[in-house]
Image 1 (cartoon, rainbow, N blue to C red):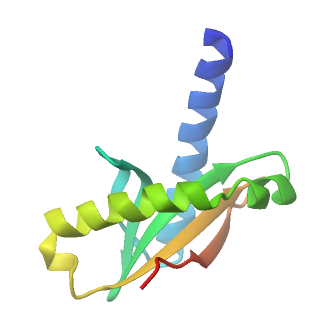
Image 2: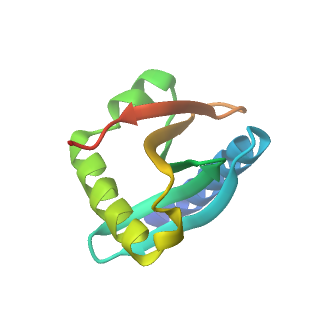
Length: 121
């Protein structure tokens, strides 16, 4: 991938995350973190609504089918490991229920998919 293509993808990703943040805010979520980086992975958005803590993966694609198919189990393992580190470093959220969501950005209005994946018990 050329430098120009990588820069365009980076800008597109930032714009998609910004739209996802506003979609979640309008649904009553408080955004706790964006692009939360750990040594084990990155979480696009960490959001809270009441006693629910949502770790959100954002996917920007040309159509909904491509966006859904881009949600791979390997990514969820990375997000789950990063979520565990987030909870370990923010013990005040230990009382919250945890959920893994996705926001798909394919058109003007992002689509929020709650509970797309569950961590193994």
